[in-house]
Image (cartoon, rainbow, N blue to C red):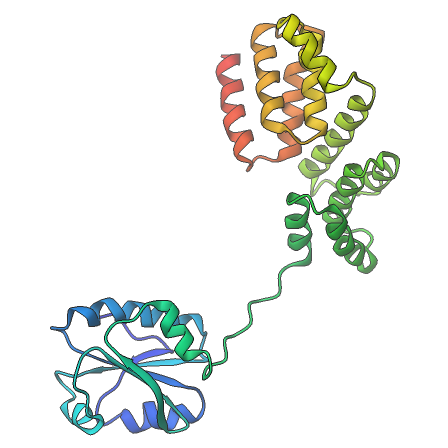
Length: 290
């Protein structure tokens, strides 16, 4: 069985009073009665260890080898294995026999054990997650608080500008980006500027429906293909835009002084190197180049 940790340990007849009864006055102690020959015990124990670790010290797990500690088995009248008993304030308060699913075990523990609160989420990461979900107003609320505490916070400024851009507040978004100092977040800044560029360009182009009609009539209408890709980028339809730009580059890489290639690189900056679409289309672009 697994090695002991501060929250998980073996107990014997000699240590049971100190390690289980006495400690249960400070935090609940879950006692697992098991044996080497017991197959269900070997299934249950890793689950109990996982649960105990998740409580981060609010719950202890004591393991009793019933083949060795016969006196404890007799004292508590253990008749089947595995048997699990929860001790609190010096006495058994709950338990079960036979293996149980995790949900049942946690339900049994819930009235007796305080589950530690998860660490507070980083405010910027929370705002980024909201932005990624399209909840721009909620992201802005968090970012305004961050910027109220530090109006030079480059990451917050860049993401705030992107939120403004999504609401078509392009002039204000540009002003926010102009306030970003230093090169620490150069890639994120370039991506935000690319977003503004696409939105400005899209505002001056024909509607997507008209462009699709032109392409249907002439699939080699490079200008319409490029303009539709810009419209798609302004609407965050990144995969469709990347696919169109790559095909345009492959078919006519010199179109408009290589604008398809330049735009692909701008989209990579916008999405960031870790985005799966960037990984995929960077590889496809490399294959098209070489």
